[in-house]
Length: 146
Image 1 (tube, rainbow, N blue to C red):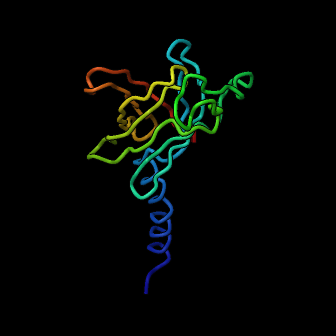
Image 2 (image 1 turned 90 degrees about the vertical axis):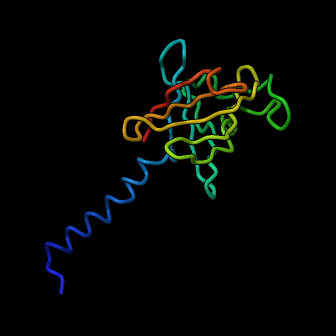
Image 3 (image 1 turned 60 degrees about the vertical axis):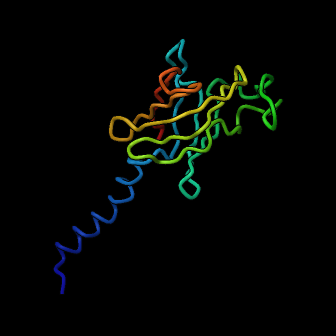
C-alpha cells in the first residue's frame, strides 16, 4: 500500500510532466518581434499535427493593422487577411531543431525555407528563413506568450 507522501509526490510529478514536455516543444503561442522597433508585432500559434508543425497568425498586436491583407502573396494566400494566415508550415523535429519547413513574409509575399530552434528552456524560439543554404538568411527570436 502506498503512503500519503508518496501519493502526493506522484501527483505532483504527474502535474509537472505536461509542463515540462510543453516547454520542450514549440507548440503554443509566440510573440513575434518587429526587427526595427523591437516591439511585439503579432501572436503566432504553433501546432503539431502528427509530427508536422505549423504556425498561424492568431493576432496582430496593432489594432489598426488587424485587417491587413497579403497583397504581395501568391496562390491561396493572395489577398488573404494576415490575421488568421498560416505563415509557417512543414516543420519536422530533427534532433534539437525543427527543419524542412517553409515560412512566408506577408509584407513581401516571399516564401523561404525555414528552421527553428528552442532557446532559454523553451521560452524563446529562434526562427530562421533562408534561400538555398541556412547560412544565407535571417533569424528572428520569438518569445513564448503563455
